[in-house]
Image (cartoon, rainbow, N blue to C red):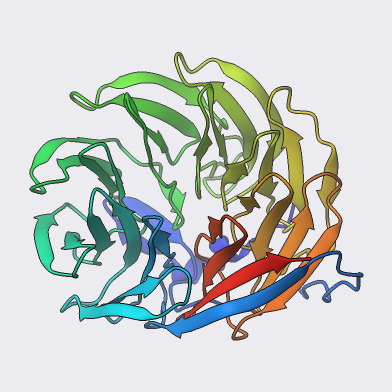
Length: 386
């Protein structure tokens, strides 16, 4: 394991908040502190071509990801611009100005487009025309997209609080908070909103299922246990994306493990030692994770066997992995390249360039490709072909 991944830069960048200190790229995306691996040579087995591209505002020090309702793509930038794009052509359908700087987005669902601000405002706009639907004032900065499913919206703030709201009105149903360790990563776990629970990873290595009625834990499980003599060594936060299917919910932790748990009771199905800040994704057969050294690994989602590990992208500041159908997994890197990897054996299948800037947000899989958003504000639809 590297001594300091990009999320832990130097002690001088620590900021104090609610009694805890955060580490991260506070002054914008940084270049790797170690020399990244060169782009690997390989023979492409499929094409990965640009179908369309568009522009939205730059991300600045934050992370923005595109969202979709199946008909359109929605994207936002730091300066408050939000755009709706036709999913097939990239044609701009509407563009609005939120009227304030943004720190997270976008969440899409229940006819809403959701973005967050550094001041704790959760802004909801109607996906049909971009009109303001409602604003909810939460307790702290929003850094991850809100989730909207089944008439509900789930959001988390940087002070350890999770809120569940009514999608129609923005009225709060409940909020729950927990104490934070002395040191935490700037990255946070994304939320998953299921039919019966909100799933959330936490600083300190815990994963919980929160009941929709009142936010009480249905169960909690350990993804990682803090270990070490110093507070820095004991950072073991669950961060990045979670993934779930009908049976399991899976997560990864920094200086911890990647693991899958039974959604009904939180029992551990399997766990393997690894360190990751980017989160995980699932397809029909496998779980994918990018470790702290930027190696991409696959695990059998039923037993946790590790059929392959692709280490030729080491230290390229990879994005979270995204499964594209059941044949590929994709990652983006700090130079704006998208790498398509074969799910069966971890071999490279294709590569595509964007605008040369970091791809840090969550890439959006489509039926025959994916959509990515770069730190410089480019939105690119990439099509997989033969």
